[in-house]
Image (cartoon, rainbow, N blue to C red; front, top):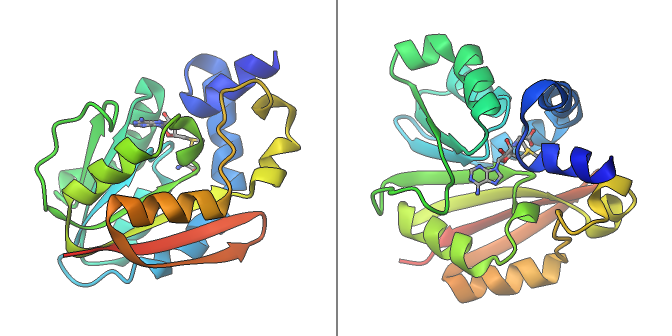
Length: 202
Ligand SMILES: C[S@@+](CC[C@H](N)C(=O)[O-])C[C@H]1O[C@@H](n2cnc3c(N)ncnc32)[C@H](O)[C@@H]1O
């Protein structure tokens, strides 16, 4: 049962996926509120959210800022939910949502001013490849912002105990960001996790 729930956080699907999505909307509002101002969004910026889930973050950003937001998520259910939630912004060409795995997606290099993701890093078994891909799609000096729950916090939840969630320590993430070619790396401990911010080296 716990494995089933853990898998639903990784890739929500079906009825249980809908329930998990509702939980994430309520549970992750605070994290989006903390992360979005860190993105320092300027007029006409182009952003990418990896693992947009229900699409609440995409909606909040595109409602508030004069910018363009793309998103990619490999859950078909989340693609449908987020598309519905953002239908007006999609119609107005402020938002474009894709259904697919970020790791396999063909994305033009150097096209995003900002890349962000919340609660996604745990599902990458190895961070070198995603960090290097994020670096490729960011413009020079572009910002990457991520939210990651503290490893001790996620370890308390039974559904994270069976290998679906990688529990990364903040020091490990910072070292791997440096190796991937990011600089100005900083992080704040907020509530139960970290907002991590860094810049692509030119
Ligand atoms: C735990 S949910 C987080 C959703 C939302 N960001 C939030 O914090 O409420 C993780 C999301 O990332 C998506 N995801 C995980 N790995 C992905 C990948 N490699 N490519 C695209 N989407 C991915 C899942 O489908 C899911 O919607």
